[in-house]
Image 1 (tube, rainbow, N blue to C red):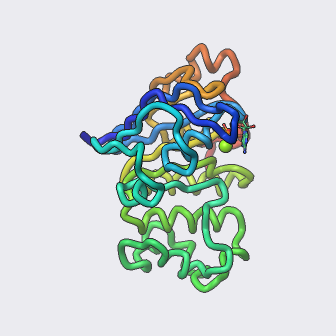
Image 2 (image 1 turned 180 degrees about the vertical axis):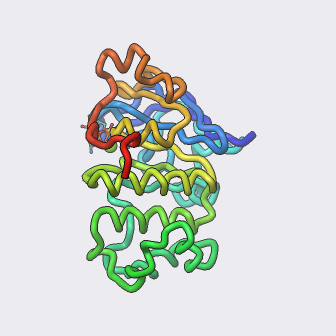
Length: 237
Ligand SMILES: Nc1ncnc2c1ncn2[C@@H]1O[C@H](COP(=O)(O)OP(=O)(O)OP(=O)(O)O)[C@@H](O)[C@H]1O
Ligand SMILES: [Mg+2]
């Protein structure tokens, strides 16, 4: 059974209950957008699935295996990979060195889907632009043996042209597996996602086909953050 199934997941940050009842699944080959306004628990959901934040209740099952008692490292080996907002790259290492960390195949192969990394090959990651760093993070994910990618707000703070590039990068990762994507840029989410799951105060408040989001009651009620509205995937260039 190829899916990531999250059932009644709860989690605290410190003493404070943040997730109360997170309940949804990602099927093999899907991109699922995790939507919601600031502070609703999206990042905490990704971190809890990855085992970075401890679960207080519920169950996580990946490809039929229960993850609850697994460490982050074990979950990584089980096929999950978390890509945080800042890309999670090693600032003091070069692009090439970053790509070698956890690579499951020859690193030069990354230049097929991500050719913009070639002129940056020997540059220290700390000297990359925000967009370049994000492409490096996607390149690392692509080179790894992970099949389930948990990606947190890739578009945050980036210019429209760069966000457009990330749209393609997410599709490239989708070819390798499945994606759970936290994204407040609704147009980016719409361009790449099959379904959406909306989180409100640590609970799943709505879900459905991505193409139905704008007709949903939750959307009309303003529960989806419209950040990044200037990016329009329909526009030319
Ligand atoms: N270390 C912490 N201790 C206690 N509460 C925290 C801590 N870090 C974050 N929170 C709170 O947890 C809640 C959920 O945070 P989380 O980062 O998961 O939200 P989010 O949906 O990813 O938000 P954003 O859109 O701002 O990234 C927020 O209300 C936040 O203020
Ligand atoms: Mg967040």
